[in-house]
Length: 417
Image 1 (tube, rainbow, N blue to C red):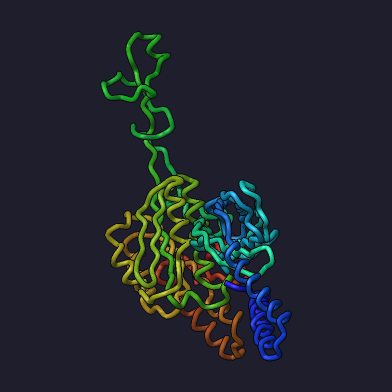
Image 2: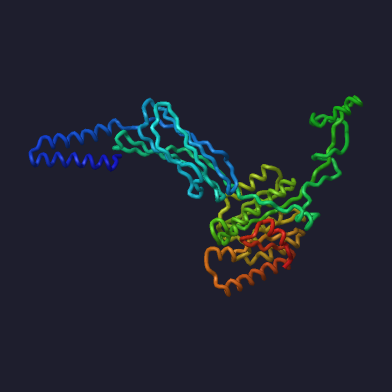
């Protein structure tokens, strides 16, 4: 493709030839023909080398608000120079360039390499892909341009932020429910010593007590105390109404932060955590423990989008058979536009579950993007207080979470309305 400079030069050459023919001026015709020949020959000899691009990321998984360090290695694998090479690394518009540049103009010799380094700020959770790499090759006189793409993508997952949760508060409120991994005085899989018994074929060699073998001459194995864990269920509201507010501050963003923080807290205590996300449908992760479950939950929360209008009652009816008896349930929802929330909470409480409703105030989020008259705001606020009072009367612990309130502060304000 010709540049504007080449187009003007070619047009000038044709004009000189035509004018020279009109006035019978051979010198003008020769000059015009020379310009046209120069453009044509230049387009023949222009080209680009074999470009290889490799991208290195500082991490494949990050938390919201972290920085991502990117390094792009551009190598000329051909036997000729690249001429003028413009390299541009395409980045998602949700990410912000914090330092460095994601583009550079190069002129690489055969086998030569160049590195482009820059830092991205990741203000939003989600699944993203960096790439492809755009290449624009210019010839020596900047008369021809050729655009290319290197289809090289790097996938990255931005997890929600993890906030600190007050452990002492949760234990003091429900000491029997939130017990973490509890040691039982029965043999089984665990970490504490229970007793010695004779070796049975099939027992792992790592459980053999070699000191007892040296003392008695008989193979003996260590029996451990069985650990029991609490099953915790987190239900996150991702309905379309959860998008109210700004991009960074809305009920869904606060909900993902609280769900991730609670899951991290209980998994760290070796509890078993399950996650249900409802909106356009129901996505459910069965209860499990360990780092694998931790990253499963974070990956699920990273991809949550506000859509749909599935009621909480349909969720509880679907999952009631999967809930462990007496297990605690966290419902994270603004409770707006869902009249089934009180009935669903009463049903869970009636089944013996301890229900905690963590409710981001969508009314206050709406005030961040639109002006609500004072009287209308007071009426909406009163209606919301009545809904939360009804939930508290159903036997749930209710948390009214304001936009400017930290998660730990919100949890400390659990109260019965």
